[in-house]
Length: 419
Image (cartoon, rainbow, N blue to C red):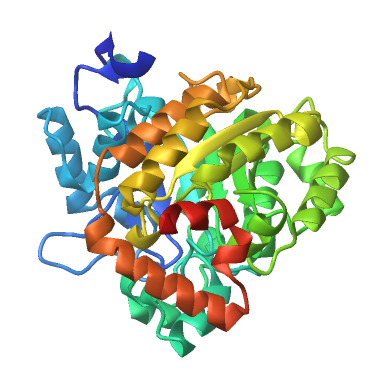
């Protein structure tokens, strides 16, 4: 892969190529398949047919699908597939996208009869919290509220999903192909839902450990921090490396508002409990903060809290972006609020973000590096007119249903918006 050092110190590619269609497969919580978590549009399918979906179609059928072959063809022709719009948008804002972060050199890719090196497994949507920016597609707790309240979240996923059972048998049903793939697997990512609530996650641990392949596999998974399961630590310690993604988007009452009904103090307690149980030589930790219009103004406070209170337990502070739903995307904020946020983040105290080799964007070394890219992303489009009323409607609906209040939880942000 050809590289050129370009905007904002990010290693930007002179090619549109992405290696993930040759190296990774993802299964989503509804049983459909795609190349990665950033891909949009129709999921893997064969020509003239509906999307492939588990349990009717397994990993092998998805890996050989017509649409995956077509996606590979586009990249070999140096095209910019529309399915990859999220990466193109991030790169336009100077962000090291997943494509750039994960892509391999052409010389390192197996183009003939490729087998995956990376598995991205959304093993189920079962979850015990319902984050504001989330939806029923990845949180079962959202289903009742979205349906009962006719929430706008319904428009962001296929409503037939509620009829889809969790992927409880996905590991056992795909055992034959997984046994064939595991010797070549270097990394497995598991997301939910809440990972510690999903039965196939524990079947996957057993399969990797019992087969002896765990020792060459890096295991990455997210947790909302509400579970402490010390009995799992022994199995985790068998892997080459394990990376906990702690989903922490803010602190104190702002955290509680955004990640209802989780409690910030309980999550921090569990962080410390896990720290006393795991082998820190094998198991690493990072905060994975999803930045939306709700929390971007408070990123300096989160950074300072992590630096003062959590650095000894969590090695890295890392950030991602809320693209959808658009009514929580930071790009819809009023321009005068964007200006206030940009100034606040520019003048924040610089903090070393920790062990950056586990970061998604490895060009960032401090929170200010991230803040520069956040503000660039926020200011890259003006979506206020199209989506602001949707935010007011959905935020107000959720406040009423959950007995919460945006204005009192985010007073500074609220004043700026109404200023």
